[in-house]
Length: 273
Image (tube, rainbow, N blue to C red; front, side, top):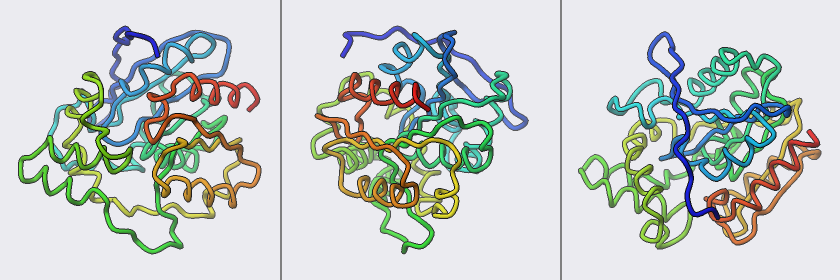
């Protein structure tokens, strides 16, 4: 992994009821790549992807509304999967990417990516879903794994809430061992859980997934919790033509733990999509 990363340029797209913060890089001949982060993150999450992908592609990485540097308090109505997907469709059109982008979503961002592909299929040249964790509509609701974290937040214990969430999705003792820039990013976005919990069991219609017209890549960390693998298995059943990639030496935060393998998997897929 590189020793450091430069701060990306910052832009704001005005929206009728707020603004969408994003960064972009690259002017390559390849079709654009849209990067959608997951929970407790923002566009800084993609620090090891943006410069590499930008060598051959225009790369667009938004901070979903409600995430840093948007400092308004939570819970907030616009912090919702469908609203985020609509924002991203607006962003691609505003940037004159009417022919669409290769869309990459991680964790909760994978559900946003799928919603974008469902709402505006013409804007998705391909879809990469990295460790999606959503429930399908024909499955029962599951216990909210971060309910304790939300309660800790409400009680004022932000650090305890973050530790509970991060260690659950990526393995015991992960939060303690994380680097400083990652901890700063997560702390900046901790309050988003107060909005996210309101749609914790938001389902995906299996029919919507099966009807995806674009090429699909399913990516999993070799050491990710088992629930993420079951989501990929179900998606593979619905989309038998989908490709799979397994990122060695990595758990849920695969693009950070093994960025070279993650970047190679995505770029190879995009090149053939």
